[in-house]
Amino acid sequence: MKYVSTRGQAPVLEFEDVMLAGLARDGGLYVPESWPTFSAEQISALRGCSYQEIAFQVMFPFVSSSITETEFKDLIEQAYEGFAHRAVAPLVQMDDHLWLLELFHGPTLAFKDFAMQILGLLMDRALIKRGERATILGATSGDTGGAAIEAFRGREQIDIFILHPHGRVSDVQRRQMTTAREENVFNIALEGTFDDCQAMVKALFNDHEFRDGMKVTGVNSINWARIMAQIVYYFTASVALGSPSNPLSFAVPTGNFGDVFAGFVAHKMGLPIEKLVVATNVNDILVRTLETGTYKPDGVTATYSPSMDIQVSSNFERLMFEMAGRDASRIETLMSDLSEKGEFQLSENELAPMRDLFVGLRIDEDDTVSRIKAEYQDNHYIIDPHSAIALEAGARCLKDNETTPMIALATAHPAKFPDVVTKATGVEVPQPARLVAQLKSEERVTRLPNDLAEVSNFIADKTRAGDTT
Ligand SMILES: *Cc1c(COP(=O)(O)O)cnc(C)c1O
Image 1 (cartoon, rainbow, N blue to C red):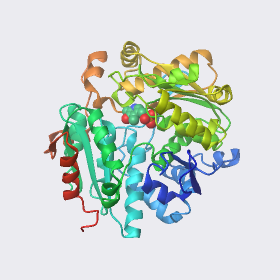
Image 2: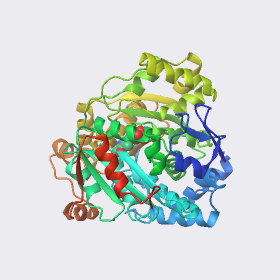
Image 3: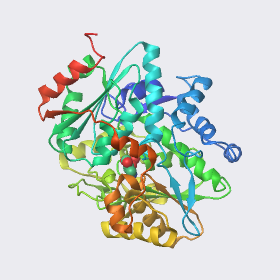
Image 4: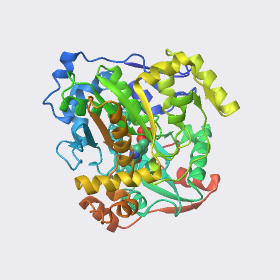
């Protein structure tokens, strides 16, 4: 499988190079040259298979030029063995036609573990094979940093540096990052906001001498390998509920559009998916875009579901590329409109097929809290605010079409957001054992001023990658 950039100017690459590059050189996002497809018979044949077996079948077409079957199966086993549930991604029934897909049994209790765990193993393997090292650099406002550190701690060829805004992430989120003991993990508490952290990381990426010298790479959700790993649970959930005979819909709590784009890919690959509900909090750029065709970022509001507090939704570019008939010059035009005029306008031809499959729903703070409360009162089941948004949006969409089962994605464990969950339910959220252990461990973190030279000197000094070693 070869990969092309959505902006058409970057070299066509194989999987491994796409994974190591992250962003394409022309500023675009890599997508497979074509979508592998599964026939109805092939989907039926997945019934009764384990999560790991389905993961292999679904992902292998994307990676087959870079890894053997046996090696890939072995990495999949390792990636998911740390999950605290035998089914890896179990389904729970919430109402007659409404289901919840629990994606929070990984080591950091959020769905980002699904992709990050396999990405850590695939990257380390590729670098060992090439005799190279890399420096992973990222900024986090919460979940991504923890999942990345958990996946990359102790990896042989990689050092990881994660910036978080000092004093501005939750206790649970900070401790999930700072209690890693491995020598290749560096937490930087930057004296500034999350935007300062992001600006700092961007500045370091744009310093090509630094970037090439320190072999810097990123693992944010624009990395194709992350999307690929998220396609799998759309398959496992569908097959469990009777695919390919029964069509299904999914409600996905959405920020950067990575998770719901993976659902789109599953649809492209042949899964009978009727609707993909793009469920957002009040940061509703995607809902507005689906309604009006105008994509226009405006400020971010802090909510109970911080992992969805976004201003721009990077992975949306991948969908636009598909809707524009894979015309990279059209994407160039739209993206330059965005940087010059602060917005772009999709055409009717691009919007119509989008609206056939995607439904946008915005869930405000009150309705998020009410949903957490209702699930506890009616079902004795405690959900986190991100999952509540998915369930609420899924339930609203079901009202219009009662015949197709709806699966809402539960992307985080409620113990990660104890304040709002306790406020809604009136009960303390039980903490999983692995979290209790983490919360007690010693923290390792370096506090640095919001100063480019200080941060880049720190990284250059600590990383094992780069010219001097
Ligand atoms: C990252 C995240 C999301 C949003 O996923 P995207 O792929 O960015 O749309 C939703 N819920 C939780 C808990 C997350 O960590």
